[in-house]
Picture 1 (cartoon, rainbow, N blue to C red):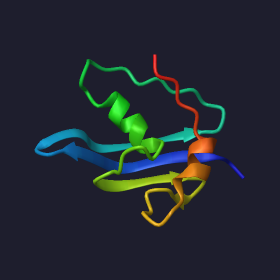
Picture 2 (cartoon, rainbow, N blue to C red; picture 1 turned 120 degrees about the horizontal axis):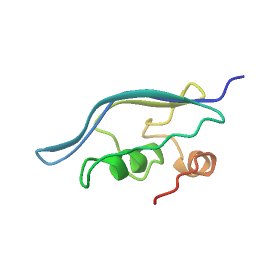
Picture 3 (cartoon, rainbow, N blue to C red; picture 1 turned 30 degrees about the horizontal axis):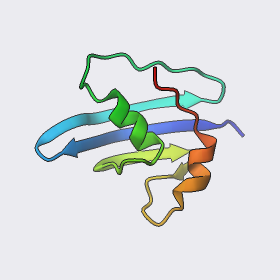
Picture 4 (cartoon, rainbow, N blue to C red; picture 1 turned 30 degrees about the vertical axis):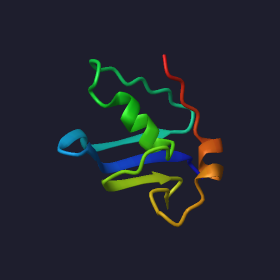
Length: 87
């Protein structure tokens, strides 16, 4: 099985401020990804959504084909599988 993280058209807003708009990408097991952007561009918010610390407003996040944005899902086992380093 190929382990993969997929974001499909992910959106996140705080009130009228849309900080993540239609973000889609795949990350395969073993790949390293670096998010680069100006202050306030939504980098940390996107990572918090991936690690289920923030709820997405739209789109889906899949981990090995499982939709982890399902509100009935226990987030703790998912959080243990995702490593994020804030620099």
